[in-house]
Image (cartoon, rainbow, N blue to C red):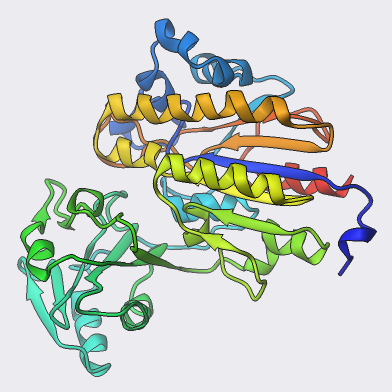
Length: 385
């Protein structure tokens, strides 16, 4: 591994993902998503002047017209559906594995048998659509994604510790074929509060709305047990091997594939805290990559809250107005997304193109990207040159 003193140049890059900020539906999206365009349905043409930095970066131009430039383009989703775990790992250069949709009900017998064999107590709920495990963990469908894309284990730290919860999730992971099993744990949450929030959606999914129930509070913990990504082939590991430090902030800390590298990970949800941490880390980093995620753009989409989406986007634009002008000739900024989440098209992710917007010295002129791995290639080439 090269020492920092041996690097040719002290290059820095910030990769900022605005979670769920799509710029127009892809041709292979489900029929019910036709017409989705997260950006255009959050910000009207009359409101664009309120976002001077995002406007300057070209966000509204690519969202309205699909036309690209040498510094602003779009990327397709190379993975199936519209999923944060698959999307973030593809942004980092990972290749999405073959997966199949699974719900708790579709794998009910296998999950129950495996948990009981592992000496967990299991109580079926809602006509075998969910499970109550060890008196404090709800095992259910994930309501934020398309049906079958994820299964949740949501527990209260007053009853179960994170190590036990992850062990439960590993048992479930071995029985299902979908992209991820998510283990959530939060403090100061009663089992009764979790159980009282269980409901079944019109699509037949049973679970809880974790943001609405209050899981994303200070002290919450989460682990995403994904399937098939090799961290050693992704951008963070590759850069660390070249001697560049890498830090993961926000959802990247949760969903980026794990390797043996000592890469700092700070899972933060609050947008102001994410941006503050990013700015502070940038000041102390002499070279390397920060990959940060603003999750509340996605959470607002799930809540179908256009006003909140607008506010979060406005907060990001104000931060960019202070941050971007400070970058020098060795610094590159890349803004993208992992999928869409049009708040006017229901509570689920939408299969939309992602914007790829840049500021700083590009290693080559941008072209439309067939998938999100083009973002990782852009950043890797920047550090190589």
